[in-house]
Image 1: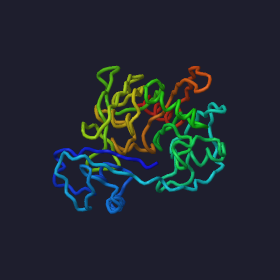
Image 2: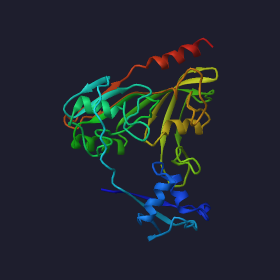
Image 3: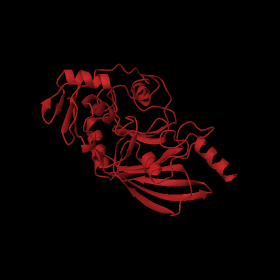
Image 4: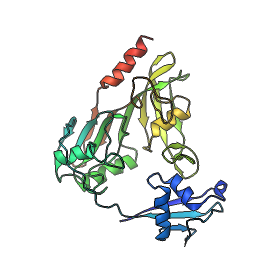
Amino acid sequence: MSDIIELTAPAETAGTRIDKYISENIPELTRSAVQNLIADSAVLVSGKAVSKNYKLKGGEAVTVTLPEPQPMDAVPEDIPLDIVYEDSDLLVVNKPKGMVVHPAHGNYSGTLVNALLFHCGDSLSGINGVIRPGIVHRIDKYTSGLLIVAKNDRAHLHLAEQIKEHSFTREYEAVAVGYFKEPEGTVDAPIGRHKTDRKKMCVTTENSRNAVTHYSVIKQYGGYAHVKLRLETGRTHQIRVHLSYIGHPVLGDDVYGKPYKGLEGQCLHARKIGFIHPTTEEYMEFVSDLPDYFVSVLNKLEKM
């Protein structure tokens, strides 16, 4: 089934070309890809097909029908997996920093999906198609830690519903930049696509979704802090965007903060997940030890 994305062009987009607006708000589409969709009448503005040079008036409803993903030959690869738990319904995997979750442009091999296909064969849910078999939720390439993988569609739907209803426990630990005046707090700020950089997210009220992150300081190290974060929602880059928004970007985050010498990507670890098992209906919880790169950063901060 094709995906349909509905956007509402804000007033300030008046005069913006439709292909430019869509490419900036739907990250997986380049401007040329948008133009192809327009040519196929897959883009509607206020219910009507438009040309690629159509300029928005502001306030219109924009509907984009994405084509069905083409079958992708993700090749099973014998990549070691740190499996924390496994049964006939699901796996809990401890993803290393630097591993991409599923194949995409520029990363067609060496991903978690490639490893899962080797380990599980055909025993993965198909709800997200051949590109993301078994993937219920994701964590970023440079974020380490726990994620859950569904082996069948029933388990996938059960787990996805828990995430939707905010009953799925997801706790992270991070090193953040700056001194926290308050030992704990909540960031309740909607997240949407950045207006000018389609690869970034930002706090915005336009074409956004509600996002809530709870944080508490584990230890303050002068101008840095070791923090624990609990997700109430699960938006793209949520923790990274929210911490940057309150002036405390994740250490090493070169997208929402600054790079940190000796650290590749952000210092962020998915430490704990908890969920109700789709078959036994028992609550299960798993905790991952902080990885070596994270401990190394903390040791450096201790000596500062």
